[in-house]
Image (cartoon, rainbow, N blue to C red; front, side):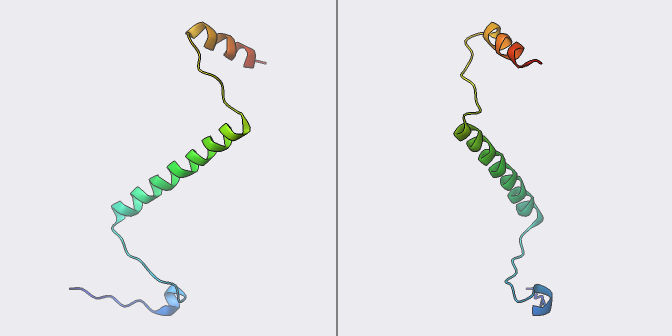
Length: 68
C-alpha cells in the first residue's frame, strides 16, 4: 500500500479527501445540475413560467407577443 504524508501547513489544518478524477468530474456536473435546478425553482416561485400550449399556433402567438 502506498502512503503519502501531506503537511498540515499545506492543508492549513483542514481535512483532506482524495478521490478519483472521474468521481470529482461527476460531482462538478452534479453541482451544475443543482444550480440550474435552483434557478428553475426560483423562476417557478416568482411566477416566471408559462402554461403548456395545446398547439403550435398558441405557442407562436405567445412568442409574437414577446417581440418588441
